[in-house]
Length: 258
Image 1 (tube, rainbow, N blue to C red):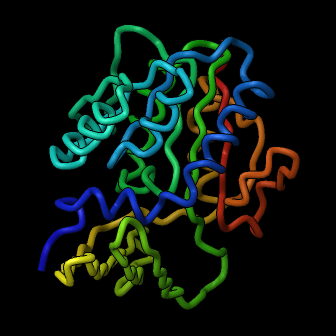
Image 2 (cartoon, one colour):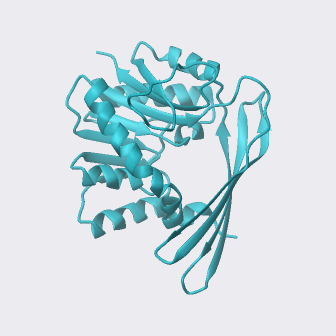
């Protein structure tokens, strides 16, 4: 069975319906919360580059970083097809380091949770603070665990694009609250117009955060970042939500302190 990361086109397809609403939110957040003009952008863990490409199409100077050669190659081809420019960097998001600071950065849909330890998460945030200019933003989005015990939800999606039908099932077969790790299992079945069927399954660990645990993490870097506002995955800039125990789909706007 194939690995998800070897088929970035399906990775891209799975999240395509979220792209426009995310891009709109980013631009609204830049206007409302940044205290500097936003031109240079950075996405750590950019995957297939759907957001890098979308923001490049808006005229931003964008850099995307990822460890997957297949994802980066796909992003380069997509940029070339659309006659767009962006910087594609192979690297680990644990220790981001760039010579010239960015005006804003974004890391959505649980990519932050690939940092599996508190040490790595703090290192990442410190590195991001060093890579973002004062007054610039870092927007982070992730699912949070309820403070009370719960049963993981199995999510299923079905979509069609350019003759390909993609069926996706996302589940959590293992969860260790003590170690604060869960295993995410992604199963995809892609049926192409030719009738060819590709089955893909990937499992990878993600770090768990309750709202309280994430607040504690942000507190460790509050000398460099201030939490400006919190939202959910509705991406409604006019509907901020309190960062409390009820917030399970968290979208956080951090601003680099001067």
